[in-house]
Image: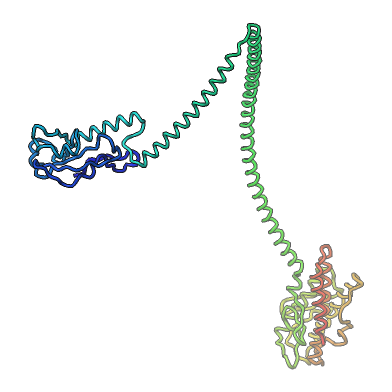
Length: 450
């Protein structure tokens, strides 16, 4: 069974008051009681120095019929240990009356409550808490003493001031001066109140202005954000247009450097052969080109000369070119001549007449260009049926010389083609790179002729 104990009201440490926590060793009397010597607690040296005794187990069983708690302890109300030791057995007439331990605890609790009300500190306390409370009380006492000394000094000054008495005239003057000061202060208060009211009105006006400015600022930021969005959209549109312009400019540059005549009528060379549109014009013993390819090359050549003449508005004197694919023809006053094979080397007068007629048309066109541009000249001179002293006739001629004569003729056509292109783009001159490309192409074709 847990013992009834007191605890410190500050740190809740268990307290040993008057030996109640440590009972003495059993020293049984003839009546069955045990007692213990006195144990001094936190209130040692007082009347609590009494011995405490408890019932043993046998006596507890005997006390069950009295409706008492079997674990109750008993303390002596008065007397000392010596009187207890000399006391007769329990139940004698001269024995010291005993009280239950619960009543003793109630009495001690009442004592501690009275002490708490008197000292304004919860009781009981342990030694450590007691010293701490004592230090706090001493500090409060010192502060109170200092306050008392300050009050005494103030009281002494007031007493000295009261000893100086004013005359009636001085008192009246002092009163007048005090009234004047009061009036001045009241006027100052009125002025300050007026200034305060003015400041409040100005503050209210400034608050309204601030609210208006806040609204204007909010609208400004809304407009600013809208403008930023529109600006970003315009910038995006501008970037798109700039990209389109750059792409279009690059495409235009490519178109300016590109000419349909060069793409359709590509005059070039392949070894000993002059080529147009990829078709070889002529044949040698080492490379017997098929007549179908030669016919296609003649068709492209006739078409090129006729196209250049029409572009420049030039009309041949008495000849008419009829490009008809791989079956081109040339007409003059004497009739129409076929410019396609196959033909026999011996029986090829008509074929030779057609080639000579075409060479004459090339000479007429180049001579007309010279009349238009005195700086123009062809690579190889044309005289009747010869170009660079090589005849274009096939009859009684070798294949290699005939092929070289046709290659010279294509070279002259290339020069004419470059001049036509420059004239066609006269209002929009070719860029330096395009002009240099055409000049280099003609020079390379001329240099390729052995």
